[in-house]
Length: 242
Image 1 (cartoon, rainbow, N blue to C red):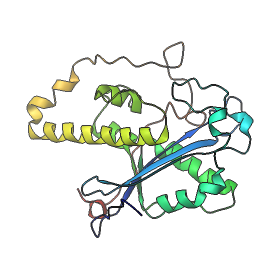
Image 2 (image 1 turned 120 degrees about the vertical axis):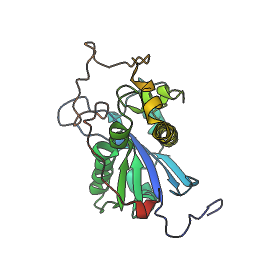
Image 3 (image 1 turned 135 degrees about the vertical axis):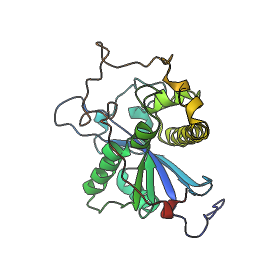
């Protein structure tokens, strides 16, 4: 592959990925994958080795909104001529299978949707060798200093711009957020008695909720926007490097 940079021998490559889906609006309706985006990185130096993204046309086009509520959202016209999942399944499988999976809230959402999509076409899903869910990692290690720990809030905290809700853009933002968090934690570990106190002051960041009452009301089963925090699947340092 042109431009492919091999990772150092013995390193388990990490594939950070994200999917965009429809949002069910009635009981029993399922999520449909509308876009898949991924980057493969070497864990020793975080060099991007490969990237891929594609829009995906669902079998029932009517489930896609004619107009999106997001500025860069995916509309029915956008996916009308996109390939179906079965047409891109081989590429997605080869990107994910046998690698460490990384992403934000992927354990409770993206991984489930990938498994469902492969089941729908009668194929076994790709299998990771480990999972790094940045939602669990950052909730445990970074705390809630950035607010509700959504990607948009984390990006605002670090001045990385607005989340676009497009797969490949969000994947790259996810990686940048992790780099910034790691740098802050490294600096705090150098002078814990001084720097660890700096983030405990009241936050000036304002986050918005979709609920008129100011509370997150959607459950994880019906929306990816209000995840329940949990620990990430552990992985060995020997396989990923420090």
